[in-house]
Length: 347
Image (cartoon, rainbow, N blue to C red):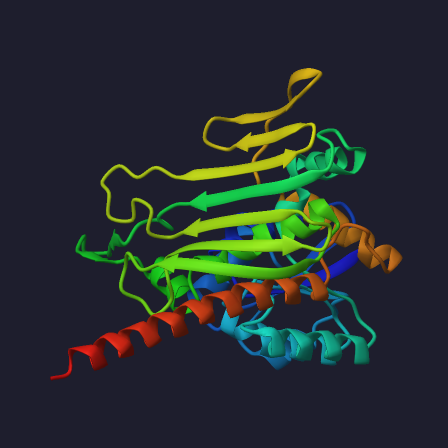
């Protein structure tokens, strides 16, 4: 049995990580940490966790083999450094760091302390994702030349109701926009999937964005990546698609276009198929997430000291670097345009 502790008892821990840890053979959940007493109490009682801490030092003195970090992104660096300094292996939520330098610091610290650092890109573990990787490797649609990866949605809407019923800005969406917006928060999954499926690094990228809402970061982004093998990936991400609509809809699709066919996945239509010269093959539909699959791989890595499929710290670094640099480039470009317009308006 490998004993885990979890840092950060928020939404993603509640619906994803904690249930999956509890359900995974070979893993035990010994301790949780959160500075908020209500979240801590909820996690401890809901998942029958033996130990709960509001102090990091006390938490890290627990008898743990590994630490899962599901705290807000700005806390990842400190949490990872504290955990690896105590010799704990780490699985950290995305984005791994707020920028490339933070990721490199984490990777270096893990290596110096002789522990493993993984990034929790759970999309990799969906049966859909694994099937796509297998089909690409087998040449089922020939050589893949173009990928279209789209996730446009409202991130639970611009507004929500508080305890009194008053309409207020949705704090979850606000937090994600302040941390960098849709490409930094969710787009890292698609960046990782493109590299995972193709087995080819990103050689160059370009980006365009739009500001439907009023934040520094763009809320609708188009990222174009050129891979070393000649393939091109387009990632479209949005947190403003129907963000003020009474009846919101969203679009989550994967399309891989090859020299001998197309792989299509549409979450909303529950569609997963391959179209090639041999005909159309309908595949078993699954959702895009798979926390249990990720924890099965984590349990194996803790047992054997390696994993063929778990995203490493380096995988997290690549996704964080591209998403952050692309977002920062858009912010700087917009600021430059605003300054130019202001100068042009001067008498």
